[in-house]
Image (cartoon, rainbow, N blue to C red; front, side, top):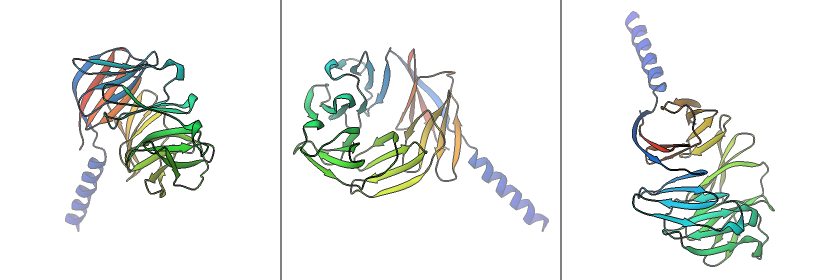
Length: 263
């Protein structure tokens, strides 16, 4: 009996230890530049940011810029495909598509669509389409930008979107009640779960995200409903971005990149 109790104690101690493991961060490099908003980096190492409402792409050897001040503030940028970048100007209900040298390839004014669209969320989807949240109908749809065709894929839903992200196959959002939802490209909507209160957030998968609260950064795992502090050597920061096990911390001095080892 004593041996059994001892083994159980060891088991639970090991379990608790595993649950408390934190991400291990190794500083990789620091890139000095000044920006108003940091967007992120692509698989080729290019950095994307906004300065004076000008969208900028920077590599080690070149800088490209896209400026369209007549459309006002850039509301959102989707860089998941560096060959087809999506700029969203919400105030003008317009999306601009750019190539890898930031040349404009297409301009889409949703106000001109035959089906009334007032877009408040956009992103690149599979098959030459854009995710659209239409605030007029409170529905998610897909806009084929080659055919200029819009297809509604969900029923209307209540709630205000406070954060959204997308990839080719899914559109995810968090509402004002901290409910986390996901919509597939076929229009199937599911409640992923409830998330902690946050100031800013980035969804990593359908079960994990990173969020900022104050000047602290946390990894949140839906399985186990556990938030784990991510420790790094910056007391304050403006924004964070995570991709391919690289965590980028944006401060007034520039970007510091950390290599992440996940336990």
